[in-house]
Length: 208
Image (cartoon, rainbow, N blue to C red; front, top):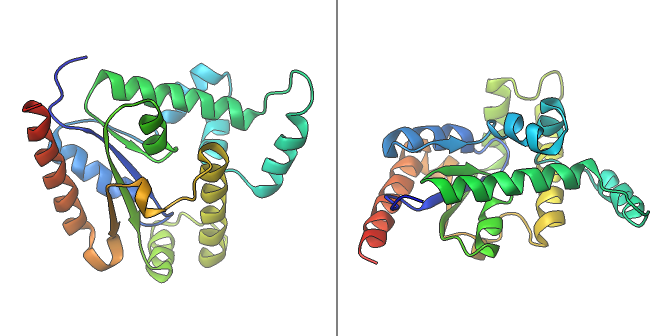
């Protein structure tokens, strides 16, 4: 592993809070890669599941699916697709963090790295539900579904996934170095704060 210029940055977020957009610009400012939807292809190769499966299950888990997994996990030799995909993504997160300075979006990356003893700058992005609803509707992420219902559904899926694999509640402040309200602060200010903090921590790394 080469000498670190910046810490590995993890960005956890509420659905519709702008995590992808903010990570993309921070990536450009710092000159380091960010990993979000890139997980699908590489995780598919590791897990044996399709990219469509990864996109659908890679960070989402319903309560009913969790219950079914719990029941079937008691059967000899059963290993759910959710577990297999999580394991493949976990291996990728650890690989990315070990190889280079980078930004990793979601997928329990902050706690995966913490448990592995890998230092990271952990960010959580959130915003008012009305602003997030407007955002996903503007981007057309909800398809033909009611945007508020779709947002609630996606929040529930992410929260269940996160709690299942970390035993923590998504968005609990002590799991992060910094929690930012993207609605109140705006994307530009959030980008500036994250970029400045990463640069400062990068200087600290050089003097360690």
